Image (tube, rainbow, N blue to C red; front, side, top):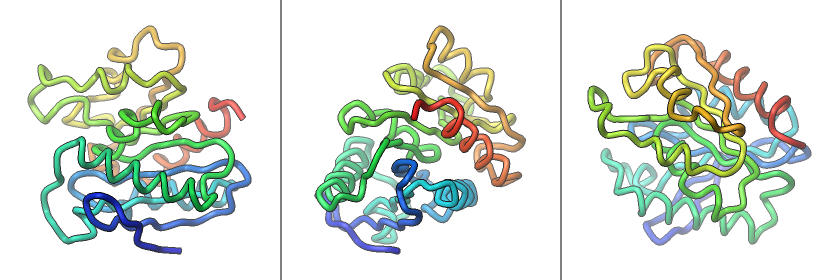
Length: 206
C-alpha cells in the first residue's frame, strides 16, 4: 500500500506492509536515496513477514524530485507530520520502533523521545562526514533513551562499527552489529535485515 501524506513541507510518501501483530516499524531513507534502498527493502520484507506493520517514508523533498535534502529540522517536521497522520488513523499499533538508514537514522534518533518510541533501529548511522571525524554526530546516538541498535558496514567511511561502539560505550541500552560492506550496505542486504530482526526479536522488550 502506498499513499501520500501532507506535511508542512509538501507531501511525503508512505509505503506500508504487514499486519502489526508484533508492533510498528517506521523507516526513513538516506540523503542520497529513497525507501527502495536495498537494505530498507530487505528489512521491510523480513519485518512484515514476522508480523510487524512496516511504514517506509519517503521525505517530501524526495517525492518532489529534488536532489538535495533540506536541513535536519525540516526533515524532523515532515517525519513528525507523517507519524501524526498514522497515529490519527490508528496505524501505529503496538510497540513503535523508529528507524532508517543514514540521514533517516539520524531523524529517528532525534525524534524518538517526542514520538514515544520503544526503540530505535539505525542502519549505516553517519557518525561523521567522510574524512571529518572531528564533526561527530555521536550526541544524536547517545541522546536516545530507549534501546537502540546500529547495524554498520565494516568499511563505512562515515564511521566503522568500532567507532560507533566507542561512542555508545557505557550505554546499557545500545547494540552494535557489524556487517560486510560500506555505507551503502548493498553488499549483503539480507544479512543487514537478519541483524536488525535479531535485535527486534531477541533484544527489544516485547
